[in-house]
Image (cartoon, rainbow, N blue to C red):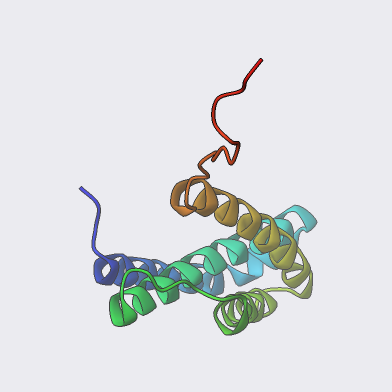
Length: 132
């Protein structure tokens, strides 16, 4: 059974706070090696996914289920928040967070279009039967 918009908003917001806290606790380890800074950027992109999920579900609970998140301010705001959180860990994490977040946004958009876009119906505007 699918969760409601408000429940999903609360769950994703709680996971956002938890992941942000984990990133801050392990800040030294994430900044210590090059591969760990890439992991820090990936975790930042997960923050982006959780933030955009929380914001979008909050708006859908508030304005109705047909409301959609826009590129500005929702997506850019969540991207800025996740990049800022990644910047608190290491400056390279900001770049990798942006790249991973752009990739995640592409796939989220692709999945949403496949699931929620209206289906195209082929319509024949011909004259009817053809005479030979």
